[in-house]
Image (cartoon, rainbow, N blue to C red):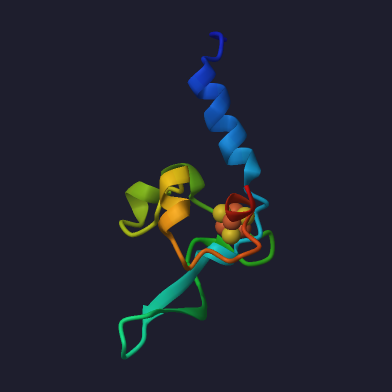
Length: 89
Ligand code: SF4
């Protein structure tokens, strides 16, 4: 197995921040004023019992609007729950 690069380690550390709560994996909708609102409808790939994505490794290829979280995106995404580990960082 090849040695991990610093970038590989940082990517793993970033992934490991996620607490697998699944709260970000519920469908969003826009209200009449263009504001994003949470729904109670889970993404079709979310296992609601384990709270894990069933297609995690390929989610961006399977669901065009699934967002890969990065520090830059986390700073901008207002709909991430306040309890999200990435927002807490
Ligand atoms: S809300 Fe945050 S901690 Fe919870 S699953 Fe989504 S990214 Fe992970």
